[in-house]
Image (cartoon, rainbow, N blue to C red; front, side):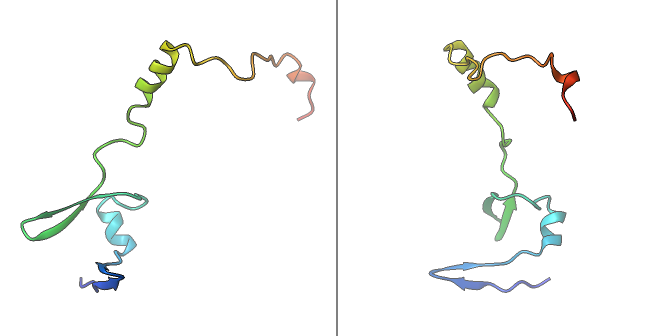
Length: 84
């Protein structure tokens, strides 16, 4: 497959077909890592997960006592009487 290299301002760019991205596991990915390996430009999915570090951050917030409920407790005892 041949792909045109286009001028974009002072840079160059390519448009990758959706099927090619899907085959590489990059469909729907908005950020990729890029490197040059043995004369080839290589795109890869980022090594970190999207929510990496969230669990540690939540633990730190709880340890600091900054995890109070904003709306307070509320019950749902009246739910059976509500029209759905």
